[in-house]
Image 1 (tube, helix red, strand yellow):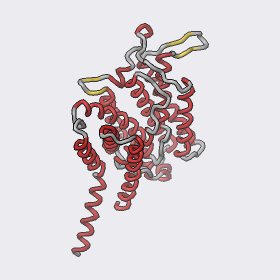
Image 2 (cartoon, helix red, strand yellow; image 1 turned 90 degrees about the vertical axis):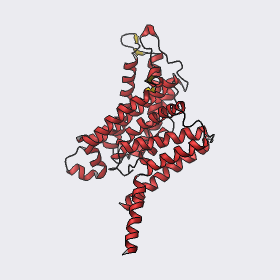
Image 3 (tube, helix red, strand yellow; image 1 turned 135 degrees about the horizontal axis):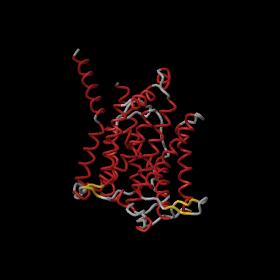
Length: 338
């Protein structure tokens, strides 16, 4: 009995550690870099890290809905790059209306709206490939990754759209405030993340749509038998993921006041890592928005910390890859322990 009790206690302790592994990882990463880099915990650096975390988290929130259904979206980094290029083209070149023989220069809110529509459109295209043509999500979004990246390159022949400050005479100035602005001393992307995260947490945890997302990830067949329109749910989650990726592209271009077609490369890995680190299962049906936010904090702090202590870019890639593999292994271990 004593041995059995110890075994149960050991399993319980292991399950508890796995449940809170992301929080423990975040504390550990902060402690390590705080010891290695004297300026790591300064207010100025904290604000920079918060902005970077916001970028990862917004992307990861969109990815969360996809992964909760048991899918994957590899196209988000390329969508971000294309979105930035579309925003840059609209600000610099305007929107040619060939039939009318005029060029319209949209205001900044209109630019953002049009770019988000591009992201939603690509997400719906992913949904079409997956639902109508029964293409595996990995393959469908891998193809879209290349298509969106190629389109971004074609828009400027691989060149950058620089100086996206707009023109007061055209009514399209103020683009830089979206990604580089401050409100009460806090970067604008952080405020934007707070709104998106609150909305996403409510949708995932307290709405019929959220319950259907979990149901599709838990068992697609059972969801179908219970009357859930699985195809509509999949269209919706990929559209959400596309919109969040496009928003990230806008934030990056705004912060840099320039758009480059290579922006967002490998961002899909950061998004997936944040979701899995946050406790979501790649097989679907398990995960939370709060967990994703904590996972994004780990990825953001890890990335900035490695830069501050001078770790080479090549080793950063190795370490991030190791983090993803470890997260998946721990996820599988948690599933076995129940």
